[in-house]
Image (cartoon, rainbow, N blue to C red; front, side, top):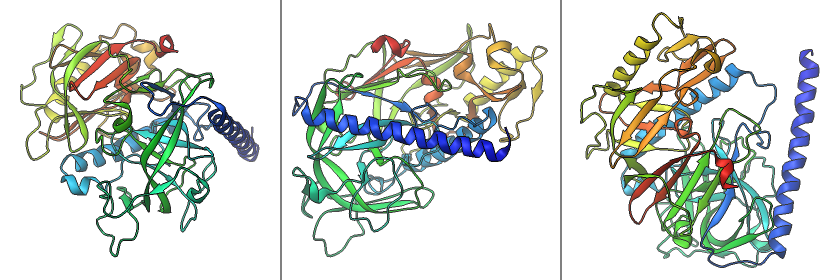
Length: 456
């Protein structure tokens, strides 16, 4: 196929995908308008659409393995920079920093929901590293293209503007002569979203078949009228951080879980997110702490096979300045490991691979350990890597979780070095085939290994 034909084929595919997504979102709106609603459901189940899924607006059937790898590396680097900065923010500045963007090009997950009455379907990006739900709203001063209709609050019977003296009104410290409460979020690349802070009714499907729906009323959200620097297809961001004041936690309790299967299979359709006190909490637990609205857990050691690596006990400790510690995140693809722990891990991996695999340099990043071959063929029987957490919980990484195919005949270790006493981040690749559950009341995080299909 020549380049012109390939481009035409891709445009036709995107047009078809847009029709499918809009039809799906309209079906959601129709279903919600006729279904029995609950003002406070005990459990909401949301199907997650992976960014590389065939159902994603970012799916490109012409993307090569190396293009996928390049995008994942770039997005992980950007996300890690954001998380490091956020870990040191004051509580006031934290409210005006954005996390995952609606045009996020890395490994991210989308959620279908509706807003207002009559309900308007929306497609938003899930982010456990931020707190506020925001979407684009009419009238637009500056808006980017999106697949679903832009929400018009003037046409909703359930929309309410928040007043300036509301306790929620903390997202725009730069506003003056306040008439209505506003919000402002700035992202690391300079993108910004600004608008009104309001309350509205959200609708969610509670079954994958779309036969049951629930609504959550009086949800605080950002109604964005001026959105600069984005190039997205999603409507906005669904923040699911630990700040109960702004997130869905304030309505549904303090428990949620997500189950992620393969992030490399575009046909995998069993990823899901569950929120509410009715969330099933199972598996091995480790203590969970929240600092600067990030989720921290305590990493005690790392094993490769049966060998426990020699790593100083203070390597992964968080210090009062915000340096160090271990964050678990859904917006980062790979693992960023504090330098001391990284050095011990990479030395053991290189020792095991010596004489068996041919080492190659990586064109995207000199810091990556890469070998010639394919993960599915050349790493059969490679020892699992186990992260040991406080309380006895383990996260077991097989070859698919530890390595990434970077080309047809090249793969790299999906672990990047952080600085000495720097923040460690466990990304979504390491969480594949795990149900990860958060209990914010008991301050525990649970790991349960499974194929997410069993939850359908």
